[in-house]
Image (tube, rainbow, N blue to C red):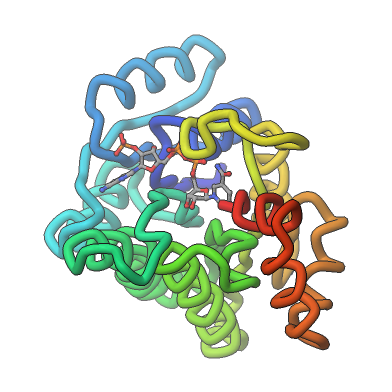
Length: 250
Ligand SMILES: NC(=O)c1ccc[n+]([C@@H]2O[C@H](COP(=O)([O-])OP(=O)(O)OC[C@H]3O[C@@H](n4cnc5c(N)ncnc54)[C@H](OP(=O)(O)O)[C@@H]3O)[C@@H](O)[C@H]2O)c1
């Protein structure tokens, strides 16, 4: 049985992933700040036969990050996989406050780095392990200020770590959703995918060596255009209707 630590498990994509993993028979540690929501989810997962534990933590702080993997390991007797899903959006403008910028970088970038480091220490000893990080289209195309910067950073560290541990039987993947129907997107915008669709992509990332899984797949074209002719993206982000579409990517 796989033992998995999922951050951001109290709502949205993390919660949908926890539900899917419980049905697959994985043992799970659910982490986020809200004890009440995590405990309620643990109870409902147990009713469908899942084995789940809750761990309340604030991942915007060094203490919150550093105790998570050791505590998850002691609850499950080890760890086979880590899903870095916790995150927040904000600081979309260069005029955002230093405090807001720092909070986003701590939560969206530093926390996954610290958790990967601690999980990989355990994975190397046991000779296997899997990491799935949840990025964003805003980490492929620079459009949302510091949120974008945090997700670009997450993509960079994911690629780098994947290459660093390639010979250690440790898989590292990035799931890249566009807009998802969760509290983060407030259900605004057209064509949003459900959190369960992203959960299935995370599960695919657990099963095979996938560098990057883009949801929906059609968005890969936009990533290609950004890489080959970024001026075209500049052009469309300066065109009113298209700016609306692009700036909606979380
Ligand atoms: N929704 C979208 O359109 C979209 C698109 C692309 C990428 N994503 C990414 O998907 C991931 C999940 O987002 P979501 O859409 O599922 O949003 P969500 O429903 O708001 O979930 C965010 C999760 O992160 C946790 N969290 C927030 N601040 C935290 C903190 N300081 N410490 C620990 N946990 C914290 C929240 O739990 P607590 O409040 O209990 O702490 C919650 O479980 C994020 O990384 C986001 O960037 C979302």
